[in-house]
Image 1 (cartoon, rainbow, N blue to C red):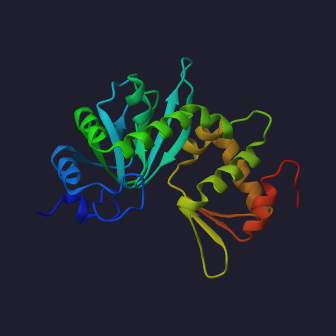
Image 2 (cartoon, rainbow, N blue to C red):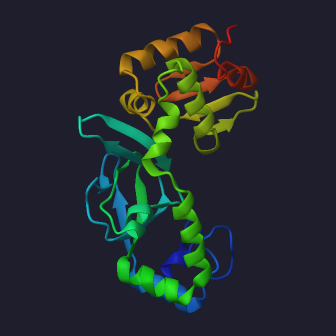
Length: 241
């Protein structure tokens, strides 16, 4: 019998290899996942779940990227996380038996699997190692508080933007033949502004400054960094060139 999880190596359910915390399932556990999970496709802008929704299970991202954001009582939106292939979202509120504290929205074409509540419980009964991993994950997950790291009022918008690039480097940047870092950012300038706690106009000015100083070349959502070492130095406050 062929299981759908084995047909897509990018997704972590695997009974034969162990590359992520989700790997290492027995054939019976993979069959359970095959029968019970719900695979969904999202276009950019589609919502996976909304803030204050009741969790219906755990979402595992197969492909694409998802943005998590939270709206406060004053209507201010804070973007605090981008999640991609083989990562899990919604588990923090799920295990807290609480409403979702954030909204999850696809920012690229995206595929995810929903593991329903009853299936999660069955898996934990069958796989103690998986249960322990989730306990460690939930215990260390700061949730929306991590969004504050990029929004410190004492840090300039320029430094915040550069820190954001460095945080996103592993997921969204490649090194070309000339040693340049080439970012393909999935975020609009409005989304970047929400993440950093500034206005879109401030982001526009910051990008212009980085170009004027030859730290970056901007083409739409493509950001080319000719000298990655200078970008890292520029992430330190009070550094000028």
